[in-house]
Length: 453
Image 1 (cartoon, rainbow, N blue to C red):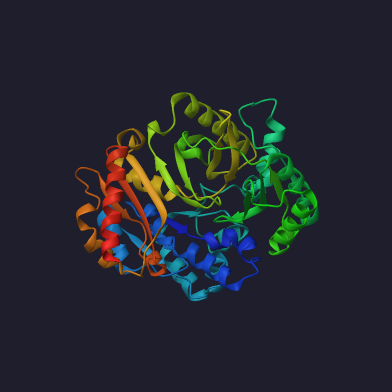
Image 2 (cartoon, rainbow, N blue to C red):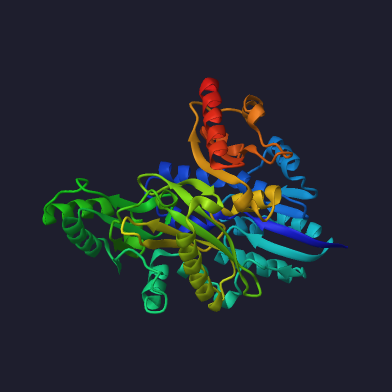
């Protein structure tokens, strides 16, 4: 028997299903599902390496992209499994697809140890774990809490959960601050509180407890709403009535922070991993690229993105949060989104207790560059570059051939997804020796893509 098989489950829609299923517009819901599922290539690229890997995907990963990944990462034994059922709950789809499940079990029994990991430790993930254990497989889950601590995933990964932790920790860790705000139940109460805050401060932020890709987040700036209280309250009530998830989940109403874009683009971020033993590891810090409406666009990673004083503050705050999560039994990856204020304060915005928007990039550059990647290279990654038309993966590779990642000098462009091209979007990562080289390469990419379109 071979020593170990890693089974990775890209259950991103499953993780977000409680929110996605509450979207009232079926077209928007379908777009959200497709956007999440077609990001699977990025995680295949991140996780396909030298290990024996069985990658469970909600959709097919093209043979061309698999070859591209193999050439880039030198992976050896990697298989892609796609359940035939599509309920959007990947782990349940695998359980209910008897033929695919039995094939997976047959393959797994060739190995002494099965490491089961996933994008998120969902309730369905724990059901699948138990099914595999019942099939006499030796299952090891180093990136998920034990069942008695599974509550930590949703609690600390919610807007209300991390806010409660911040309020509880204020006296112990003064740097762990969040924008002033309250947790509210019901749209009418939320509208009243938000209107009052907006009138006084000329701005307000409203969040649902669990959102997705910018949905469930409302940012109102000066002149966005009526300037008298009753009209403002009425307008906010109408907006909150437009989607059922505002009634379904707790609502957070908080101050609009005046952002200092000179600090990590205004949005610092730090990612950690809590190992099975409870050991805490800081993986990297970065700046987030974010739209005006708060949607995630990508990350920049480099040691000098944040000065020493602020990076120390951000990492220390991260360790404090990590220690609290670890003490409660959380295990696996998580990150902390922050906001840099013009008042020189760093505010914690939220935590994501799962694989994050940067986990796949971290794993890829760690393999390509090594542990000193933050010091040796500048990493620029973006999730949404709009193309004027759908382009085949082979055409993109051919057109951008001169800029593609070179393993000898460890610089260049990486195409992170073939599936997303069908939606006229390019996900890419650029690795440069410095910031200037990375952004120069990006401009060269844009120039070629414009001529291609």
